[in-house]
Length: 127
Image (tube, rainbow, N blue to C red; front, side, top):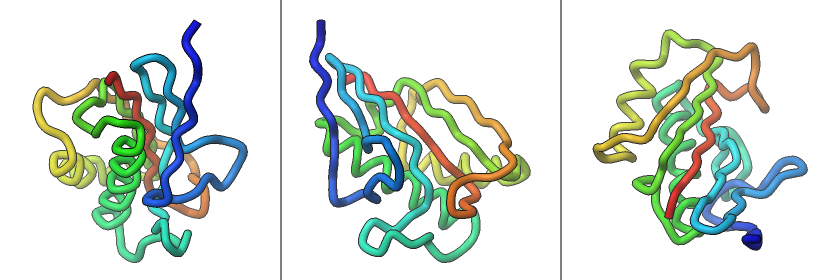
């Protein structure tokens, strides 16, 4: 049985609930959902969906790095948006953080996200 390693970095927001930033089991890393919090202040980034999505992927990148990988190790990305009409803008931002071939992905619209965020993203890595 594989042992679990809990990933934590100061370069991403600290957990605001009963979860870890990521958990590594074998060569798989499960990154918890990130919202657009600035790690140093734990406040929401200023701006709209472009700024929020950029901060989310910066946070995820920091956690991926702390796990020994990068977002290019992503095999699955789950995106939650409070408004699906911004999906194209999220794609623009995502293209800055990932290279082809892209990971599998799902995107859903939800009624609300923590702290009033417009976006939350979780990622699974294979190292």
